Length: 114
Image 1 (spheres, rainbow, N blue to C red):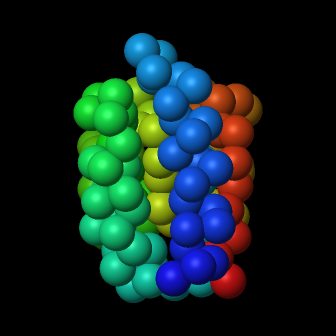
Image 2 (tube, one colour):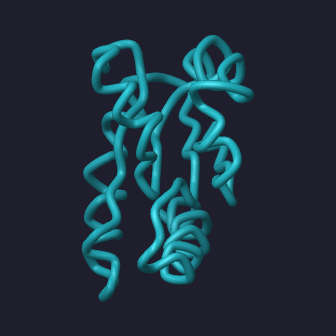
């Protein structure tokens, strides 16, 4: 949809500016875990369509992601993360000064798709 493009294109452009570097460019915030999961494929398709961003990926951070996988995400955040308000409130923000600090410091866009 037009709304999706309106926030995806600036995030993709920002990702092209970070080629060769790791870190989170955009945090996509969806009202529900189900919607975040639904949008992953669409966002990955948009990402795959941009030349030079082959090393960038989008991952979900939600209650279904095992703690070991979350640790990997914390250590090396992907370019894009899709999550929901509950995970942001209970997991990411409380860890902003610790475990999730790299993600919080690197993120350039927070997209609220509510």
